[in-house]
Image (tube, rainbow, N blue to C red):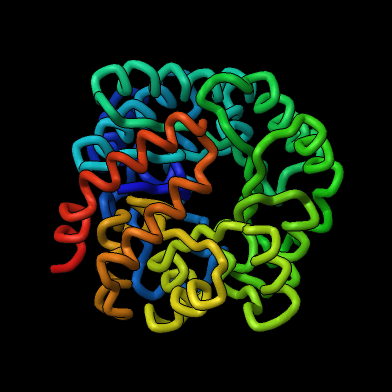
Length: 332
């Protein structure tokens, strides 16, 4: 299985929380573990994002960042994933003295030993800028990503409450990312509409996080098609943030019919209590996905991943080998 849109701080396991809290003397609250999952009555994206306060509190040391990165990689491997891109915002882990570079290096340090014990599994990192952050802080994130080019840091992102902070404000940040020839993916079109997706494209996005409110049957859709922009759908989190009302509202068929590249992802495995298998299962039940549909979606994820051509070739071979197994795991 493949996941291109997976947040580190939204995917700590219950065991991660317990280990780190005991180690650092942090009170997880009387509602633990319920307070690490999103409630069914979550009214908006802004409330959804509140669930990241506790993991952020715990992830303020190199050791802790390395631990949860290592833990997540191992869990994905055991689940049968063949590729993942894990994203996080290093600027959120500087409250106790770490620099953004320290935080990024800590994630890399946790990643490498895990991958050595997980043969034929590939994982890369995406560094997130944040919509609420000062411009100079986001520029620093881009600078860190540039300095780490050639490692497993493969792209920059823009995350956060898009309705409060439109992408038009981040031109200088992403002009720098484009100057450095960094891969760019931007959260857009989740809490707002098609205009925000267009601003993300203006900022150089090769992929769009969510993007479910793109007006496909308009010049906006034609532009996304022409640019071969890939959309990272995360259905369950979209329902939880009230971006969409039901799985039937996920515009999966519409995007596929208009030949706009689209992928299926988990977003936050713990906060949303999901994984890519579950996301595919929901869409399988809703849209009666065929084996061919699943193959196209996973092949699209490989094609638009931020990894090398050599790795993409290996992933395509693995997909051919494991498609029947993947399909049987979701078509239940």
